[in-house]
Length: 348
Image (cartoon, rainbow, N blue to C red; front, side, top):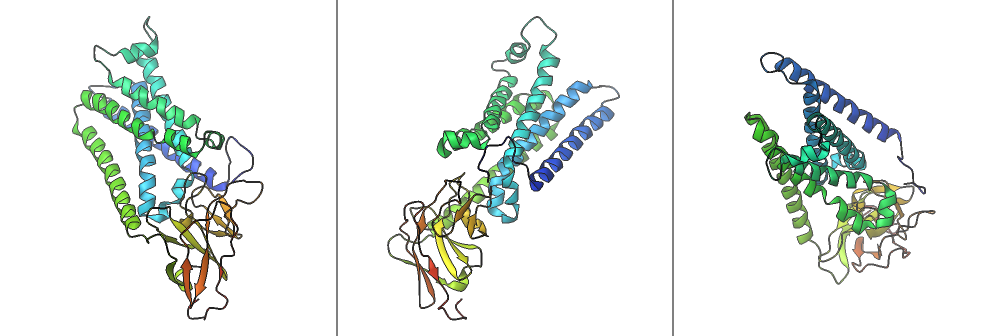
């Protein structure tokens, strides 16, 4: 979290993340070009600019697949959740790589005639629309997403509008698939391109379907709204962590244990809708696992000077059992939570 807008909020983890990403990207491009020059050096040589252009294009496609896979993969495998923390850096990198791919393509194929280079490429050789058009659509969407990725835009556009804009990544993915299908696959008859694209599409669809199915089953098995919900004993709630409660027809609730106190707040972060229930208590604050946004466990308010707030819920302990009122309080409402000091050692 930061109380002032910065171009990049650097920290050790982000520097390591970006350094590893850059190293992998450069190694991939160098390997692609090197192998391409070796394989095609005899008989049918390929120009180095074309190899670099193809390396950048395939790298951008791989990055977009990874970006779309991180969300559902983290739902299925919680140990991958830290990858979500820097997904914006991955998205901006994807746009930069795609832009360099387009820049070289426009210069190489459209820069030596009398017509405008961009229009020369987009016009295509008699095909309507040419495969370059789909790549252009994907690039424009990636640019909009990269340009609005900063928290300044999230705060001023509002979470709903911001999220809608960034859901266009699926439109960009569809345009990318069309760009590859009508471009590389149509011109290069080797089946490896078809196999790789099919694996990418199938893998993404499978991840999203499996993660969505599991989440829907969890919500369907949720508690009925109305009376107080019995959550079991205090021992069922881990120290500094939460038990997530699903209530039919409403958002999930995170019941946290902080020492001898229990507190219940909305499991939806006010920043980007992150799963607060998968975070932990840090210095008395519920901390979102996605971007580190924090809320006081007692009232659901972010510590000053931050102004975000989330809903809170009433708790009580009776006979060693934790009871939750599923009716939410207004965001930022202070609650007493529930104390487990009087509970027997076997129950706590």
